[in-house]
Image (cartoon, rainbow, N blue to C red; front, side, top):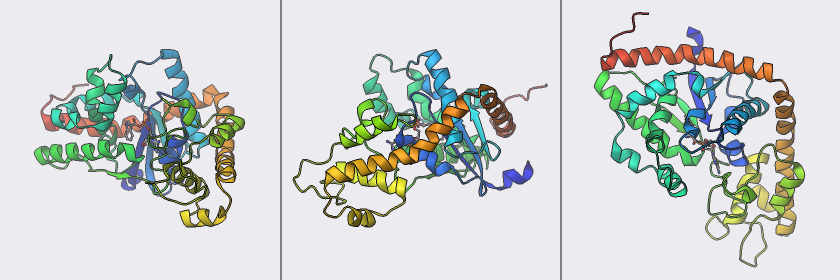
Amino acid sequence: MENEIKKKVMLSGIQPSGDLHLGNYLGAVKNWGARAEEFDCYYFMADLHTLTVRQNPAELRRRTLEQLAQYIACGLDPEKNTLFVQSHVHEHAELGWILNCYTMFGELSRMTQFKDKSAKNADNINGGLFTYPALMAADILLYQADFVPVGEDQRQHCELTRDVAIRFNNIYGDVFKVPEPYIPKAGARVMGLGNPTSKMSKSDPNGCVFLMEKPEDIARKFKRAVTDSDTENCVRFDRENKPGVANLMNIYAAVTGKTFEEIEKEFDGCGYGVFKPAVGEAVIETLRPIREEASRLLADKAYLQKVYSDGAEKASYIARKTLRKVYKKVGLVEKPF
Ligand code: TYM
C-alpha cells in the first residue's frame, strides 16, 4: 500500500444524475483510462452530489450501477483503478462539512454551475446546491490527488479546490496536496448537436449522444446536427463563425486522434452531407464496444457489487487517514475507539 501512495494520484468523478453522454466520455472518462500504470487512480460515482437536484430514487440507483459498468467498459480495469460509490465512503460528507467552514460565501456565489443550476431549478435552490463545491473539494483533497481529469466546465470548481487547500494549509501546515485540473486538448468542451453554443448535456436529449444509445439513433442525431447558417458548405475549423462545424470537427478529432488540418484535408470538397454522417459513424464505432461490454457487465450484478465493495474499502483506507489528520489539526477530540 505504501508503494501505491508514492505514485502520483489521479482522481475524478461523475454525477449519476443522467445517463453518461459523449461529453462525459470525451471530456473525462476517455482520459482516465490507460493511466493506471503511471498513477494511483480513483474514480467514483458522485451520487451525493446528485441530491442537490431532486432525483427519482430507483433511477438514481440504476444509473449509479450502470455508470460503474460503463466506467469498466470504457477501459478502467477495477484491478488497477479504485472504483467506488461516493456515499460508501462516509469521509466525503465529513470532510465536506469541515471544508464548508473554510470556503467563503463570496467564492461560492461566483460559481457558474451554481448560477446555471439555480436558474434551471428556481423552485429548489437549496443549501447543497450552493455548498456543492466544498463537497467536491473534499472528494479531491481526501485522496491527496495530484491531478483531476475533467472537462472545461469543471475548471472553476478545481480552482476553488486549490484555493481552499491553500487556505487550509496556510493555517494548519501541509495537510493537503494542492491538485491540478487535467483538461484534454480535444473534447474538453463538447457542444450540443442541436445548439452548438451550449455544452452537450442530458437536459437537451436531442442534441446529446448517450453512451448506451442505439447506433441508428446516434446516426440520426448526427445527420440532424446543426452546422452553420453560411452557405459555404465546407469543412473548415472556425469556432467563432462556424461553431457547429467546429464542434463536429472537435468530436471527430477526439474519437479518431486526427488533427483539424488532417480533417479539413480528408473532407476537402465533400460538404456537410458527407461530413456529418462520417462523424456519426466514427462515434458509433467508438461507442459500440463500450455499449456491448457495459450491457454484458450489467447482467452480472454480483461482479459489480464486488468491484464497488473492494473499491470502497481501498478508498476508505486513504480517506480515513486524511480525515483523521484534519480532525486533529482543527482541534476535534480523537475518537477513543
Ligand atoms: P459532471 O457530472 O457534470 O460531469 C462529469 C464530467 O464530464 C465532463 N463533461 C463534459 N466534458 C466535455 N463536454 C461536455 N459537454 C461535458 N459535460 C460534462 C465534466 O467536465 C466532468 O469532468 N462536479 C462534477 C463531478 C464531481 C467531481 C468531483 C469531478 C464531483 N466530485 C471530484 C472531479 C473531482 C460534475 O458535476 O461533473
